[in-house]
Amino acid sequence: MEAKSAGQALSQNELCNDAGSMATTDTPDDANVVVEVHNLRKTYGSFVALDGVSFDIHRGETFALLGPNGAGKSTTIEILEGYRQRTSGEARVLGVDPGIGGLPWRAQLGIVLQSTGETGNVTVRELLTQFAGYYPAPRDVDEVIASVGLREKDKTRIGKLSGGQRRRVDVALGIIGNPALLFLDEPTTGFDPEARRQFWGLIRSLKASGTSILLTTHYLDEAAQLGDRAAVIAGGRLIDIGKIDEIGGAASRMPVVRWTDATGRRREERTPEPGRAVAALVAEAGGEPRDIEIARPTLEDVYLSLIGADSDDAYDSEPVEEVRA
Amino acid sequence: MTATATLPTFSPARSLALGIRRVPFELKMYFRAGDQVFFTFLFPTLIYSLFAAVFSDQELPGELTMATYYLPGMIAGAILLSGVQNLASDIAVEKSDGTLKRLGGSPLSPVSYFIGKLGQVVVTSVLQIGLLVGVAVLAFGAQLPTTAEAWGTIAWVYVLGIAACAFAGIALSAVPRSGKTATAVIIPIVLVLQFISGVYLQFSMLPSWLQTTSGLFPVRWMAQGLRSAFLPESWAAQEPTGSWDLWLVALNLGLWIIAALVLSRLTFRWIHKDR
Image 1 (tube, each protein chain N blue to C red):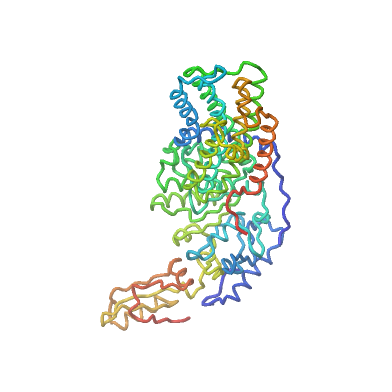
Image 2: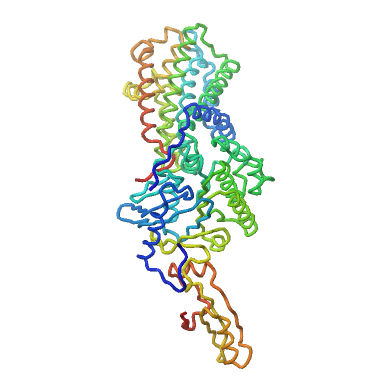
């Protein structure tokens, strides 16, 4: 139902209806829904941090929550983790109200917080072994250490690890309990590109074993790599929600043809038929157009246009000429 | 939406088992933290050695040496440090560095966390007092009590004292605004209490208004109870009422246990939870 017809621009109203109907059409005892959020609001005094956010996460799905700093991502995730109380609206995590979830409920969750921190004078293995004991069915400590790439560092005190290595300890602590639902709040901040790729491999193997994941990230390529669906929030409101390769609607994913015209100006044209546009340019120029390229907007381009940021200042000398379908 | 699913609740036995499991882990962290080992664990022994060495040639009435005189006060100081200073700064730091937030997201009960802390306090304070008494006897010739009654008094004063100080430490951990300021907030409180409670200075030399003030807090009473075990009976006359007043020792420590327990129950949060 989150698929949108080509070129359809969703208004906020339609969105709410869409998201709202998603929440209500799922039957209450739907075992395939691990997170249900309906009309979630959170206010601090007169400041509205979340203003009626609704979405569902299905079993086995990786759901990316995207948005600028201060959009309400962490507030949402911390409400679902049980750290914060919501002001109003409904929330169910694994069928339980996160505001009152007890220890057996927590035992099914894995939480990787945004900020890392630990006194640091225990080793990686000591800390993981300690935490493994808190869960009824933990994963094997050696296996978890290996899966986050810390086998060489398992006897190193956490205080002596680099920032990226500590982050891997956070991730290891998040998965040690073999969670049904894993919260990842900006998990790869501070990772080098290679570590990030390794981390993606780890998350894919967790997905393959059926773990449901709620991910927030600043890296749109990460969301595109890992996410099945995404929601974009800004200013505490849901701007869009949908499959990762459909979010933003067809219009925002329309390919762009760029070239340099006879006068040396950089030009671009958005068109659903880039091949035809290129053919027309070839015919017009009587040969190969200069610097011709056809680009499909990345998730990052779509995201930036959704939150109203200028996604493309490299080519802003010329007003963008759009061809609508 | 969904009716709240009925989940099995974890048993109190699980909380106890996990709490006991945390004790060795807590001890490992305690002894690996150099500042903690120095300012809490070794401090009473170091200060005692200093005092006993400086005043080694002083003879007190009743054939009492300074080495013996200082020992009960210093043990009371050790109990205070192990309970209040250790736990208040330890928990405040764990609150600010994210340890508590992480534990709060795990299926560990706060009860287990505190069993781990109390276990750490009991083990470290017993070792600490053992070291202090060992040094006092072997290096400075301090006299230990010889009657079972005196040892019984030491035992109950220790148990009540360590409980009162540990709970007070948990309650006090809510005060510092960050881990960095924790020791700056807590050490002066603990230091002043030791000075006005007869740990470093002879209690009978303090002005009565200071004696009364210190009477509100547990250290003075722990020191007095322990003096009753270590000093000759004739020294009871030096106490404010001219007697050991052991029932007042028990009363004060008992009230502190209850008050600090209630206060910690009311103030402790895994994190600073908002509305």
